[in-house]
Image (tube, rainbow, N blue to C red; front, top):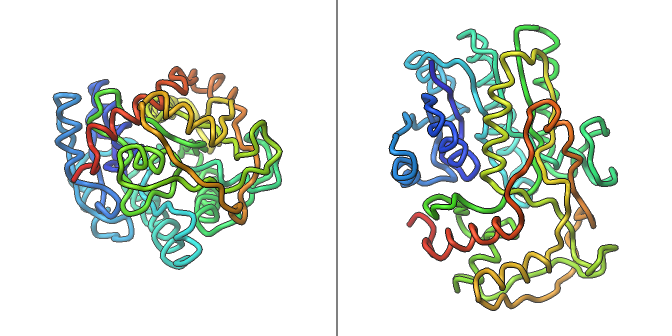
Length: 336
């Protein structure tokens, strides 16, 4: 029996593959390489001394999905595949709805056809919208402020309806906060194509000399230093959360939303100062106007993950930053 990871060559997916292979799981990666590099396979093998199966395919292709389910005996799926840039989603919304929502429906239909009804879905804290106050709890009302967030929310609704219609489904929607860090080997990490959308890879690329300076969006928020506060979680802790959720599916029927976060907030300037200390590099930055839709403070209430999955974070901010710098300094141009 095999586990299928859609989008398993990406940042979070590749770290989850490592955790599964280290537990002797048989892993099949299904990825179209739109946001990933095939070099990840070699790096995973270097870390684990095992090579996962890799199938190049697209969730929007029913034929590709049918082929992987016909060739492998898939017992459960972790669904990472999807377009994920908030800004881009406002420019090409139809591509996001087609790829993320229609592609996911394709996947769920093929899973049902092949009697595979155990799923961990890669959701996001973006489904809490902008009106809930932190700490964010799974029972809060959901909303979205951009097409990317809407796709995550739509997929969650689809999965809730699916579980209600068929009690054989066991589904966990993992709502995670801000993944950063890298595997401690420095062999795999976050490798955005083009200009990074997220804070940490941007800071890391400034430190390594690929970018000139960081733009800090706003310093007049109601936070200790005026910059935005977010819940940063080590990608290895996040990967372990996926393993815990996967293991729980055997005795957790229905559809369940679970936060994965530290429960603590860190400001942009705290990140910058911690990164300067870890790297020994200056991080020049300039304050620029706030971005539309950004809010002051976002962090998780993470007790449900501890109670239901027996999961909590283990790696602190200094480890997140040190591992990010190790990855970036060992791989100044990413996987290229």
